[in-house]
Length: 181
Image (cartoon, rainbow, N blue to C red):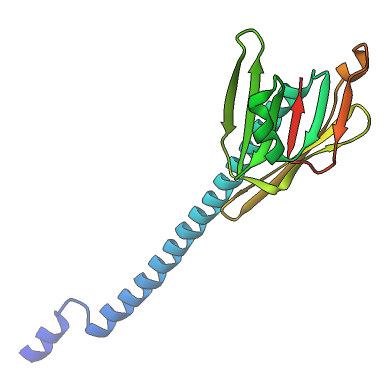
């Protein structure tokens, strides 16, 4: 009779109950970890996408500000812009090696300011093209990680019509550089 009383008063878990509890806890922890990992992956993709779009927009805005009031514009290959810029008073913007380069001549000081816009710009997806007698289409492609973003804008150049003699827009479509004054 004393054995029976001792068995009834035993408290605790059996080995089987402990293993079942650990398996259930493992499944719950796996689900929670999967949720956090997928949330983090979505965050990283969103961050990369925002970064790519921001870099592209900032670069396009800078290009538009530079050439908006030009009186003379030529579209040309990037290699020609690189070799020609040191011998002229023109301003240049060109795509090369994943960057956008700005080479602006300061007529007051007779100096040239060269600047590279930051980003992972796609030279193959970026270009300058004529969009009429007084307009340019600018396409800026940007790649970062798994994200790719292309932004384009067509800009009217009012000074090409207002100057006397009239300004000119020359060059080939799909050029990688623009020369302007």
